[in-house]
Image 1 (spheres, rainbow, N blue to C red):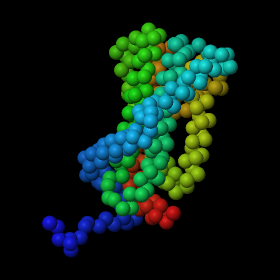
Image 2: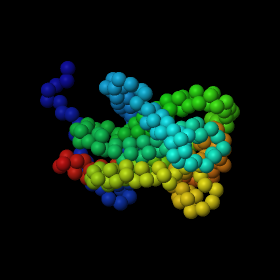
Image 3: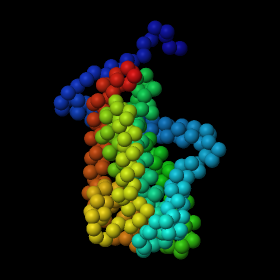
Image 4: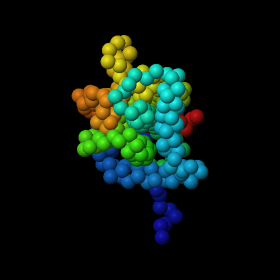
Length: 288
């Protein structure tokens, strides 16, 4: 048995500056990488099981927002309430896949931004690799996206769409959209953790950005609307993912590759920055 006088190891958070702080954060991330994935998987399984047990519809809630939003736009289009330009593919399938990719992007963004608020009860009490929280966000959104993609199979069969092997490229496009959302979310973590209104403003901004992204309608060929949508970093993922699976649009592989690479860099920088500012954030969270 362990002696009652044995002392548990104490972890002290001390502020650092400059390259010393960056170097220390990088060393911690590299040395704890195996623990990060293991802890992330356990948190993911625990949270998923808990969310399923607490709802009557279970896993259906993971895909219900995508289905509900798609049904609304298909209904509006069929009734002539909104006029949608012919996307070159069956519109129900077109709008469903657009909502799927958009939900994966926004879910990762908001999830990454709120990682510390969700774990604020344990951050100052339990020592664990904080980068595992970002992995949990990816795992949760990946599960939601996979279930939603499986629900798209009946639509593919119904409309006799056979994507072939090129349809497999949908998955890296989808994962790239999630990386983009996570990168933006992690970069905004320090602000979101200390200013609760920032996350609410982000949610409002996402509702606006929905209408300046080709989610439920194709990218215009010309005009101001096209230029505005091209400024949205999620646009290449929306267009390319649908193009490889159902056709009707021109893929933007160059933009997808560039933005995905920048997203990887953003995730790394955001994780390192989170390690550096964590002592200050924990102190502020404890004081609220």
